Image 1 (cartoon, rainbow, N blue to C red):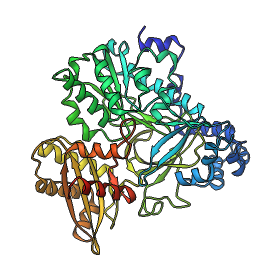
Image 2: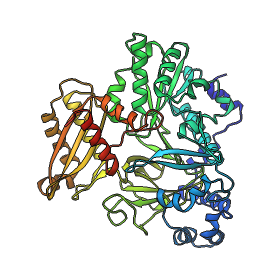
Image 3: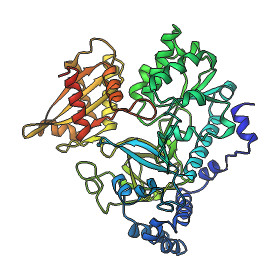
Image 4: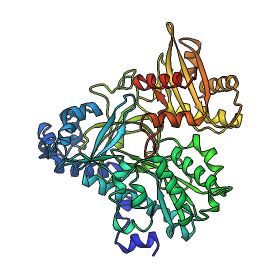
Length: 518
């Protein structure tokens, strides 16, 4: 029985996908809003912010009275506000705090500028919602042209965090991938690799070694995981078995599912590990929920999931709504999905079936198709540089650096950027990871600076004025990996930040000094 056939046999249908395809986005979101408010009306949060009255506004004839009431009753929350006021109670075992019942799982997620991990609640309802969206993504493969039947007959290798979660009495904590993998539905068990025993391993190197040794026994057709760590695993397998490419051991490997970071900087190097072309599928699975996935073959956008446990609001990413450090103001302009415009950058607020309410997830997106709710991720609210008005986004950085890497013919692995002071002026320090030998830093600096001026007019203006200079340092990729290891951020969903600020910037500078990098 193939995977696709097994889904059909278990009665898992595509009704939710059809509902989204043939229902206006506003109506889907209003329905989802109603479900969330009804479910949470008797929680501590729901009582504090008068959810019962918000529910009454759903019956009014005014088109959006329910949303106006929601905005007037419930303030916008970032992680610190949500945790300090509410979620810390869940860690103590309190029930009905921001979502009905007791929260059994917390996903650990790194902050964007601080050093400590965030504790994101993951309810039982959210686990089921993630499973349902995962099924919808698998079913979307049936629309792909040229996929052989072997895709649905082989194994799916999911490389994530340990499923051996840390038991803290009232709750268990770990990487979201570890939480969801430990709750895989029974019908998926026979397809899942590396299997329960290896997935429990906490030591990343040991886990990679065991997957490498088992690789010869598996028929892998789908791989899912963060690009940096999947690349390391495939390189390790190729070296161990003395292969030319990964298709020599997994000839039916057809699909790579990635997410969490822009894949384009990794793609050139990744393709060198393959024996032929494959399909790439992007997902937007955050610790707070499964937000979007690539539903169509060969596109660069993802479809927002509008009817599965998440209500979205969109905050124009402009200075009226955010300060210079990327912190949201107290009363920002917020929009529902029918009010957005294409090619405008928005920060996401979400309310979820895990008890996040008007919560700033920290990502910025653009709509490339409003009718189809298709988006691309452009960066992070705090992963940008605007020391003097240059407004340099991660999207700008990715595009400029990728163009330069292609032009100079080197494999881009990792990079990060720091904003620095130059007396009364400012500068950017770039650290670029590649294992390609003899990359000329001076040439790279000139070309990168020129490209950034092409993609960002504000940057071009400030390079004449307050942005004094940029510095470029080329480093072996192992420097980035070893720093992640030092911080305990190896494997799973951990990604190297594209912009380092605050304590992380200091840690990086100290680390470079210790290893003798000027």
